Amino acid sequence: MTTVTVTFAEHRQGQGQGVVAPLEVEGPAEQLAFAEVSRVLFDLRVQVVWTDSVTTPSGLRHRFGVCEFDAAPLAPKRKRAVTESLRAALGTAELPSGVRSTRPDVDRVRAA
Image 1 (cartoon, rainbow, N blue to C red):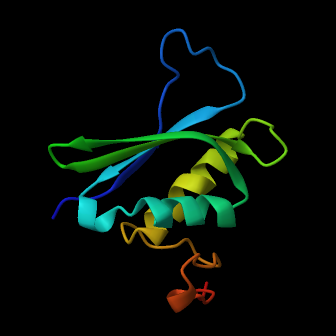
Image 2: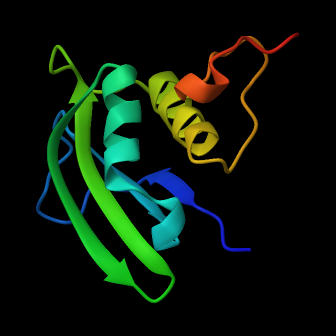
């Protein structure tokens, strides 16, 4: 089974460090809906500044330039929370204890 990978990529040469962080989500096309990823980011109050999507041999790669809604950069702890939430929403990881799912059909708090 191919899994979805969610990572914050390094800034590419010439892009600078700036406020916008490049987020990459890659996996099989049937498991990686652009609308689902966008919805999770919106629910987390992460602002999407730019996007691009490409077809890869293993499926799709969506890239998002993201920052906080107030245009602040995402702190390292916040980046971890975003990647964990995306992995959980895309069915590639378990939610940490006490974290709510962003999917309405599984919206419950897990027992500690």
